[in-house]
Image (tube, rainbow, N blue to C red; front, side):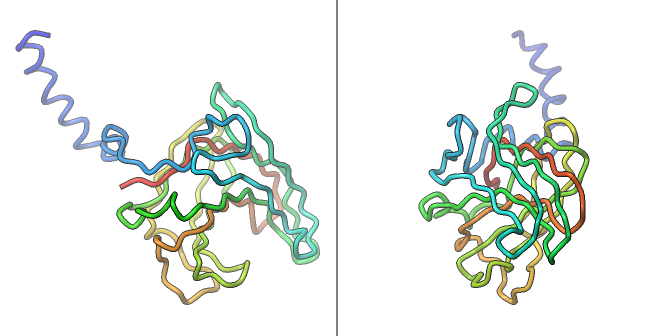
Length: 198
């Protein structure tokens, strides 16, 4: 490339990154990867394993299914089901336990990033730490999953404590749950690359 072309493109590229802060994260590739979905099964890159949890553990009748899928040429774990409020229920979720070594440096990161593809419904992300003694305790954030792949960036500061007085401590993180919860609706959510960003 000639010097003339470099002089033309330099300011344009610089302006692009200044006015698109999320692109800076992607360009620096400064991410702690938890799962890139290359395993082809329920195992995550970090060593944990995706599993399904429903309100059946507390007497509810919501129906959930977890599968490995490919959606729009992208591998994912897929949560499908019907959330029902009967018998004090109301959720289906996929959960991933995190080995301690996978998150040992997590305090230097800003938040969670995840690629999702859904059905225009709202879902929750629940973070659980070793400070959460009871199964209903967590730190929660809400997102809407569009019917196309989208990479979300959720700062830890956006996660609200739920039924716990303990402040969120990223160094004690032990589980990520992605949840269809709180109202009757049909869940259909695909989860691809998952990690933490600076």
